[in-house]
Length: 194
Image 1: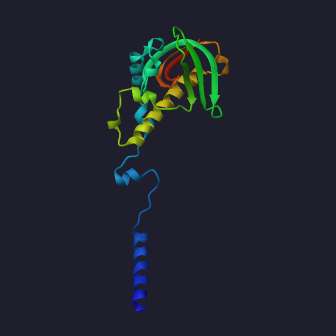
Image 2: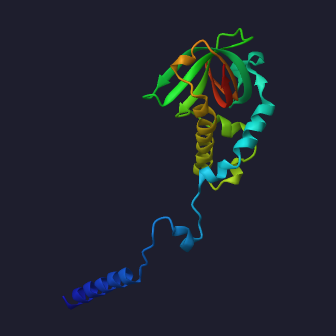
Image 3: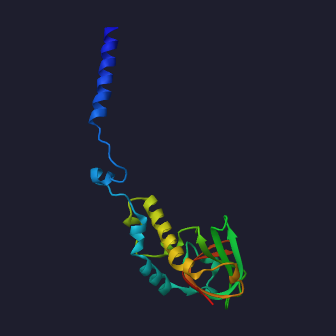
């Protein structure tokens, strides 16, 4: 019984010692103690946007001249065409327009993403300013792609003020196209509506 009491006293003493020697730090200041700085995707992408847009614009090929079923992981494209439909999903957070590009005679359905939720990381995957090796892990690489999508929404889509009234209007887009079956999705880096 004495041994048991001694062990209990030692355990309590150890818990008290640990509690008294622990230091409580404010959330967000961990890097001051560990040396590990929290990843900020917005900071990593904010200085890249203009260069990413320039690179994709320079690489862009006319969508009407491409084999859209062979787009692979994405290709920089440009198109001018007529909006045939405005599509709103996910309670108005996943909007797009269906476009009939000038000079295109294929049967693919071509849509342009308008957010605010964007599928995929096509812009990140086509640009070369930063590559996976510039990041610590897949999570940071993914966050970087999402941050680029946030910038495209704030800098390209929101100022264009596109809504249901866009049907029948002419749209010009530069972006990255990806294909899935008979559907081609363009994630824009620049767009204008006339």
